Image (cartoon, rainbow, N blue to C red; front, side, top):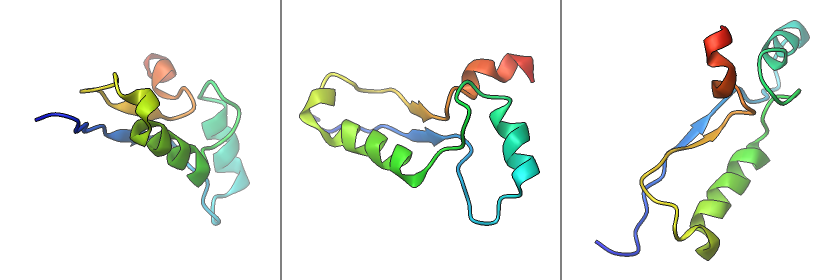
Length: 75
């Protein structure tokens, strides 16, 4: 098979209209970036994987989680 890439996008915690402020603060304190993700964050990651510029990226998952998984050992 040539020219076909399969890449899961692993999402972190993303904004929702009903998110209580206290919950947001607790989550953002436990990740590298001081904010929750947005739909645009996932969209841009998917766009990158669809572009020619990512043609050498294959067989890997892309974590779009604001650095959450980098700090999981601390949880």
